[in-house]
Image (tube, rainbow, N blue to C red; front, side, top):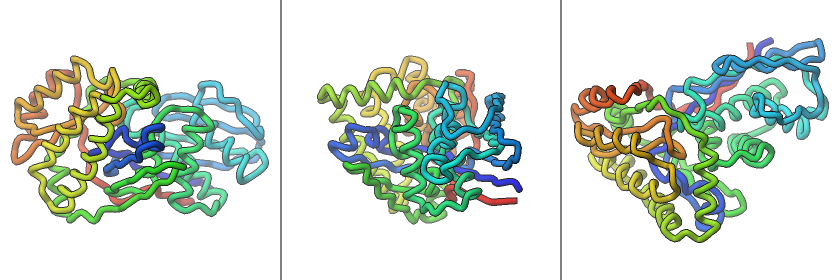
Length: 340
């Protein structure tokens, strides 16, 4: 028996950062994101020898050890360990023996929600194997708790919900960890045009998002009004983006992205730098009308809205920075699991 799962990565289109505590707890957050045809994958193969093996294919890491009730969090494949520990604690109540293999279609630290999506994929494989009774909200909340509470990894709330639900969603975040996911019924013609015009560019750099997020959270705790005001503007950006997509006002997408990028850089230091600013300026000079960094910032993927026929010339101009364009499609499907 082989158990498999797949969860999609996401592009954050608007509101990024307003889903991070304590801002979302104090003021509420709003996000608009869309899942794309890049994925995190997990495969479980049950064993009968009382051992556990974790294999991260993309990281080329493999470890094998005796099955225990609790695995130590020691820096080696912590996401795998964290999901296993919670599954044993809350559901199986006994050690499990298996091989867990994973891979992700984008590098860690690239800004597409890779870590959280991988947690969702691993959790989905266990849910399929053990037939656990979890709905979408349950799955996303448990993935969040594993990553943010159990493993104490700094970050927001949107990625776990995007990976679980899939599609284009307007998400609202409230105090007491309340989350409402509002699926948007965007006409196919609008989504097709958005995918055609929206360039996903990998800068060939990565960053430790937790450091940037910790600075962002500290700015809220320390009542840094400039940073807090910027987060309120990003909530407004999410509403603006939602209205533009629903109405098909695609010519305004670039301007809305640019609006958000200007405020996002005010949330914390290191969100941008001279290299990323040069990339952004070059894209605008060659036809893009706006863009942003994907995820917390500091590196990874950037997106640019390139209307009409400007996409090719923007991509060509960006090649001098040593990065690469990543092709994708939007996908309406969230977490998918199956057994062979």
